[in-house]
Image (cartoon, rainbow, N blue to C red; front, side):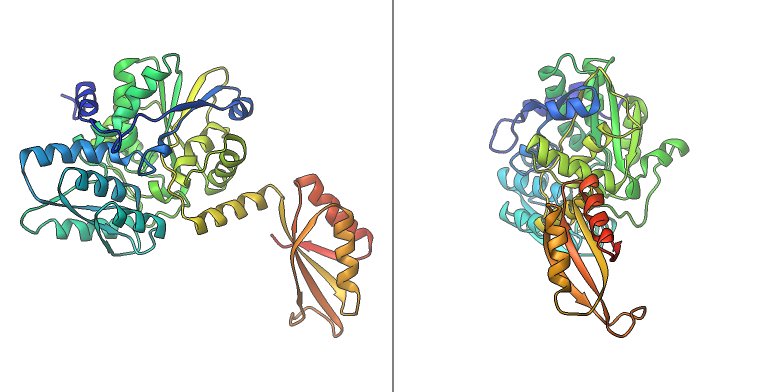
Length: 406
């Protein structure tokens, strides 16, 4: 007997009786992503859920049953952010108290949102696994129930309701692309999708520095990553469970691994071309869509935008990295004679090329400089690779030695 069935997922959806808690999220066609991938791309906009992610689905399905049975007045959970908000909102809505343990480096926006939804927040440890250990110790107190982020059939069934919506709203779907952290989301979605239409391909995506699923599939047991580091913090769980591994083995066709560079680029593409702001985890599905490891040519492809809770400082970091990769943000170091007018001359050369200088500074205390020399370091905004090459070439033609630092 399967740990989670299509019937379990359909029963979970029947419990979603309040759109202020869980809503049916829209689907939008993306012409730009369709052109870039060769597929007919439909974006499942789960980042528009009230809490900004899919996590409320599983949490509400779990806790509404807990409240009905009168099992406990208090629940505790561990999360880097999205599960925290889902549990907090769900618990408050069904009259339960909640405590959420979050890593000390969790984004501030997610910490504040979790508190706003009614939970007490404790910051502990530097990663999800440390927070998990602390939360499980708190759950040993009488009258307290631990709510796991993914190793729970009720949680998985709640997440699987997304699969029902995808197949119902896009009956001609060929491929569904789902980010993987602990595996609860893809386990639920794949169970629902394959239960309704076995011909649909389900593809999972992990960030390369937190990719535990490929090795887990190879070995047949869950494999942990002790130090997962990725800009996609929402899927940086460091491992999956036996429950979710079994569902992935049974229902998922392929797992693609993408780099943080690809995730950053996908975040920027979604912002520029689809006008959607998502967090790193939410962008991984589009990173896979645009990667060389997944062929969706001629298909109806549905990347899941699973979360939109990105911290603004993290967004700045991601966009700076993506713009640098596209040669739209340059840092140029130019060796000069430290004389009056040099900055003006170089600024004029850059301006003549139609580029914008964001900042400039002098560096004089550098070992390789002779007496009377200096470096001018410019941060320059260009339109792309060719424009960047033209700016550098113009500086070189003027007789300066220039190095692109970034």
